[in-house]
Image (cartoon, rainbow, N blue to C red):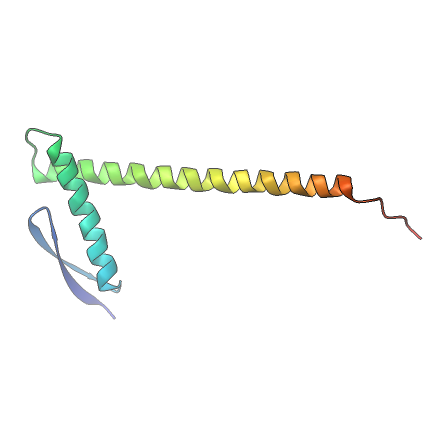
Length: 98
């Protein structure tokens, strides 16, 4: 069921329409708000639109880094499993055919 959730991001109120859980939508809004405030703190002056784009860029960077680390973790796990399987194969006596 579609519902409207009101959030505030960088001093502006927004009505978000969707089916997501209200607490999740508010958590997302808080992340965007925090990111915009962090970007603004490092600049002397910027329009809200510019801050929003830079915040989106930073959040996209964080997402890509997280995905890269996840892929790397999966590759590391695959290598460990292969190594363990090889070690087990070396320790097992050969099976004789009857």
